[in-house]
Amino acid sequence: MPMLGLTIGGMTCGCCSGRVKRVLEARPDVRSAHIDHDLGRGLVDVVEGGDTNAIVQAVNATGFSCTT
Image (cartoon, rainbow, N blue to C red; front, side, top):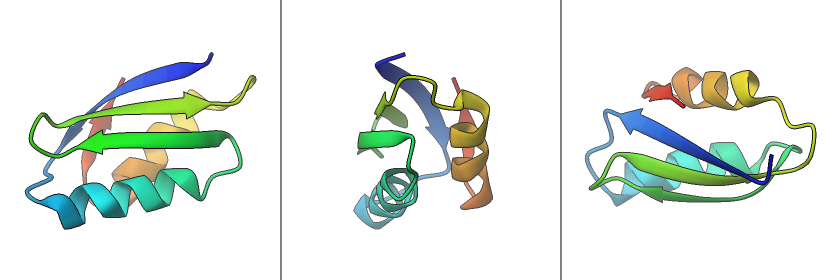
């Protein structure tokens, strides 16, 4: 699973997208993340065997809604 597309709700500014990016990139199963608050989307480069549900839950835990 090289790339994972996310729909992220509740982001209103660059600080919001930066927060989501930092949370995702702190995970050992995420290589990198590109988050766009204007579009409410994220593209995540996930290592092989990465846990998609845990990645979504990590975003939800930051206070934003997230689905794949």
